[in-house]
Image (cartoon, rainbow, N blue to C red; front, side):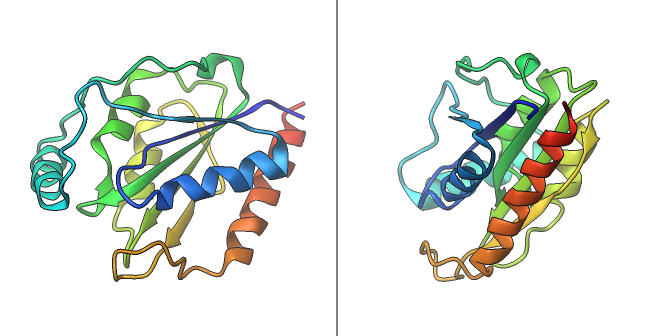
Length: 169
C-alpha cells in the first residue's frame, strides 16, 4: 500500500479532527495536526473576526514545523474547517508551501452548513498533484460536534482512499 499521511487543521470543537481517524483506521495513515506559530484567539468571536480578515486577504500564517515530511508519502489527505466559505489560512499556507508533484492529494473539509469553495480552493493550490476523493463533512449548525453527514459516507470515503493508496504501489 502507498504511504498515506493526513494533515489537518482544527480550531474549536475538533470536528475536523474526527475525520483523520477514519483514514488511520482504513489505511494505516500517519496523522498530524497543523499548528500555527501564532495561535488564534481562544474566544470564538475574536477568531471569527480575525479569520474573516485573513481569508479575504489570502493571508498565509507561519506554521509550526511538521514532524512528517510529505515527500515521504504517496497520498496526502489535507483537512480544513470551512472558514468564510474557504479553507482555514493555515491550510492555505501548507498547500502553497509544498511540492505536490507526483502526489495524490485528498482534500476534505468540515462545515456547519455549506462548505463554500473550500474543496475547490484547496484543489487549486495543490499544484502538480492528482486531486482525488474530495469530501465535505457537515456538522450540526448549532456549533456542536453532532455530525449531520451520514457517518457511513465518511467510512466509505476512507475505504476509497485506502484503495487509492493500494493502487499507488
